[in-house]
Length: 382
Image (cartoon, rainbow, N blue to C red; front, side, top):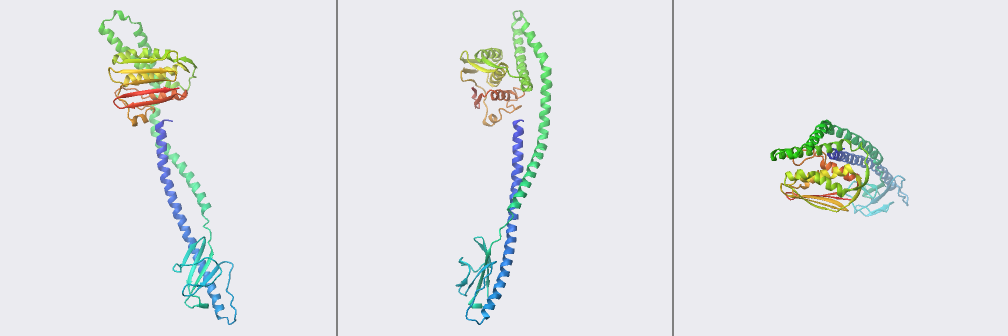
């Protein structure tokens, strides 16, 4: 999967899921408060019923002529009576009630109903009825609904992502097919051109013809490098790597010699500091692809008549050019396949993608330091 596809997936999923989950949270919150209001309404209705029942009992006690009074008690609720000064006369619960303005309220998981008595039975002006608050039992139902909604949301998100990515996938598929066809067509003419250039007798060529011949060879080498990149791109997952202890100092010198003609065309100078006999276990062709892409990028994007410094140590390789450099935004996309920052230089935008894939295969760390208008330094550490 391409990095751009991943970014699109994350963006679409993030946007869709966050907006949907926000909507779900809003709906569930509204539903919760609605159920709470319904519960409070039922509690108030029940307490009001208990209050009427208690008021009738108080009337009976008030009219009783016996010397002793027995305050009515109930299993379903508790109660208290207060005089007109809101001082307690009797209560069968311990909680202190200070607020008589609210007719109904909830405190410490208990519901209360306050009623004013126009006729003061037993001197009572206020009745307060208390009961255990009925729990709001919607949590389990809410969790089940939430799980179902989230699953539907995720499935819908995946479906939407596929719809969004289809045009991108179709375009990339067409581009891959084009590259495959291009690679197939490039093989024979490149081989023919390079073979015939090598067979020409340069001693029989005048200065102008020799210069033209060098230009043809440089162009052919550029096409050859592009061909090798395309072959690697198409076949690297199908070809088994032949890893062995490779003298990369020697291979690096060979590849730099290969690029000397291209460097001379831009009046570039190689400043080499190559430690001899540096050995690393790697497939030779893949190491050549790694080096070729780094060095060819340095030649391609550096300024005319500048120096390319190449340093090889036992712990790593670094290549520094004096080119245009890259911005932070460009560095963020440097490993994306088919991404190019300089349209003038051409190519398919595969170089750093290939560098990254080979480096990851051999646990090689890549560090790219670049300053706009000053140059770029690519460092590999193993």
